[in-house]
Image 1 (cartoon, helix red, strand yellow):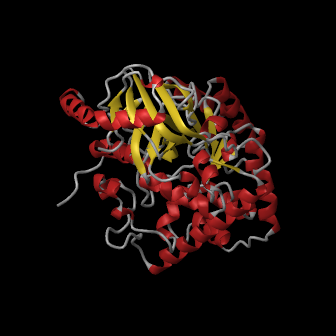
Image 2: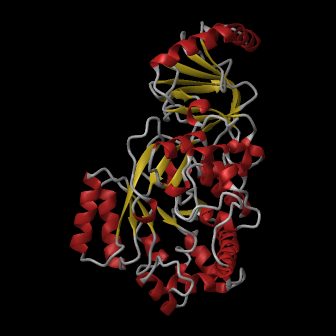
Image 3: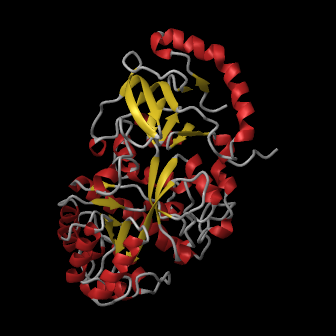
Length: 472
């Protein structure tokens, strides 16, 4: 069984060696209890019925200060009660409540659950794919190519709802009324779009703050400098927040027709121009300084072009992919090749843009930009859970450290969005979304895939319940 779960019998009074011996001694008893409880728990739900949970013996990885803090805790005990972390410290300093369920994390690593900051969820299979990949929260994107929003997943990641204003021109009063309506409907993140001029952008950013909503910019008529001045929290998509560098006539054409996939469209005319931009171009250096100048975070969504990178692996080979129906995914990868299907011209154009995005983000990172992780799932072949790890790999390739990348997928969200809440770090008072990893994430971002145990709001989830049954 992944993530040994055992009952506690007054562990605080025993030494680490004694605890380890007692965990071994009661393992068979724990398995018997858990087997009996399966009839009482819904499929995919926790088998844990205790009021408290203790993760014992692992190394807690610090994700604070944008990934620059290194106050890790070795041989740690993490106590969870009521879905929240109530204590974190070394094993000799934290008392385990009597009757707590024990997760033996000895020799392993405890990190916060991951966040996908731009992602669709259409069904229970998507929910399972996220959780099995360690994604315990998403900012949900729905409609159009991404399909509808599925809110009934059990279990499922915590969903922070996103919706947009400004994709079409309207009066300020109409945009304000739409923002008010979205706030009443429970939307937490407002996506501010291409066709908002600066005066409307500022008014809508102010209204969003009044409602306690976070803001993301995907701008056009307003520049990204003006987005920073308006107090937006984040920008999304490398290609979109690079638009300020384009010649004015080209940029205006993109604003009017931002979504066409025709290689002769204004969007792709701009993308081809961007693909040819030199890393030493003065416009790029100036724009990088702008993006790094304010308290704003960038969400590149590099995963959208993962399949067009020469080092990409076939996503259908991932165990999680067995949960997914390619019919649910926009432009899914070919099952055999792991690549997009399309003509040579499309493949060349997409590959050039993929290379360009990494170059651009390396320049933005060196200038001091802050980052959030978001995959863009499920368009252009991106897949729930799987593609967030592709995004993290992309962040590694622009020069971010493993700890900075982990922060981009965890604690940076609470630093970026004032309404995010207490989640994203392994410390007292935080929502208990946790992963136990077999491999050390400080040694490389790929180790974030080595998931043994998922804890969602204090409930232990069994990977075997989330993943498809193995094929014989």
